[in-house]
Length: 391
Image 1 (cartoon, rainbow, N blue to C red):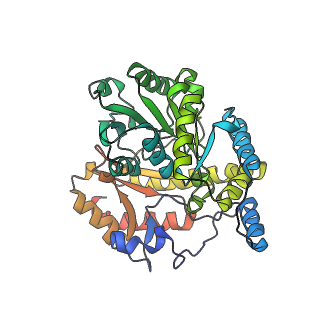
Image 2 (image 1 turned 90 degrees about the vertical axis):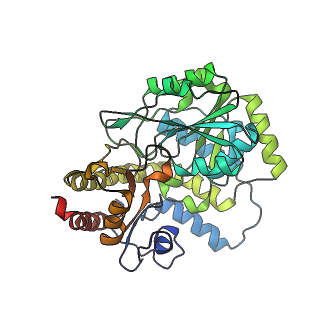
Image 3 (image 1 turned 60 degrees about the vertical axis):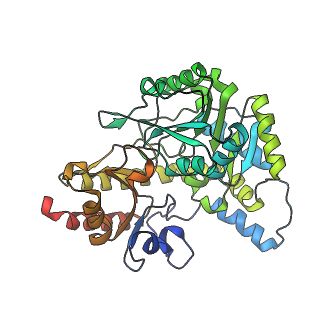
């Protein structure tokens, strides 16, 4: 059994999450708790560390070709863990999934085109879209029974002649929804009806809690594969985001040819260490590690939720997936500046500001609970103290 309770010192290791929280949020790394950047504080599984150790001990970091092993590991993982049969020629390697989003925008849209987001949603989407000279179109999601739902009827009013693509976050970040098959089909129908491409970012698909099951988009709606761009990666699951290795998986031959042409024109290829890590992670040993990780994260989730929901005016959205709690502060009646001061100033916890996730996020904050239990317990104590006057 992996000891997820082991405290691992990350200060001074060039960690964005730990070493940048003072510069970004004014929370000192000396006694602050970083609950913002979406990486975890656990070591990657031994199978990954051993594979990377062997590579570094060999000492030669030259051109490598492990395409068959790399693609085979992806095929095995998607089949065994998600019931999805992937062919090796569908797989493209990108420098992480944000790069994968950027590459899809570059290959399949033009400057001035519009891209639809159901907000609030992962903040990097809007950033990459705007940086590429495309226009973000936001469709705010309503809540039903405290959970987000995608409103395709409202999206109908946003369709223009310039709308080219929909980006879907499945499972959803930051709301933690595992979309139902019916919901996924509704998105597929919307895209088919308006001749739109669908980019489905499924990076969180391995961290799903009991009672829920993630369905890959091509299984939910096989009829959409002629317009579907699938994005997957081991980075969130195995805490290897810094190796910047992701996959764009394209079943349709015509779309695949267009994407391959842009990859070739830019001479892009994955790095060998990231590919070695993926091949080691997507294995029976990696699967055992994930099956130990998810219950640990689930217990962290319950502990944090119990604390937050006991504070009057605060509500943590019930999560079905991810290690990222989405906390609503609107019930406090406080301004954003007031509750930020309590969380960052008084509790000394660095968190993501909800407004960066787009329309609908302004009264929220995102808390990363992918850390050791002792740190979650400390965060709970600090939050109780910071909001003691409400209790």
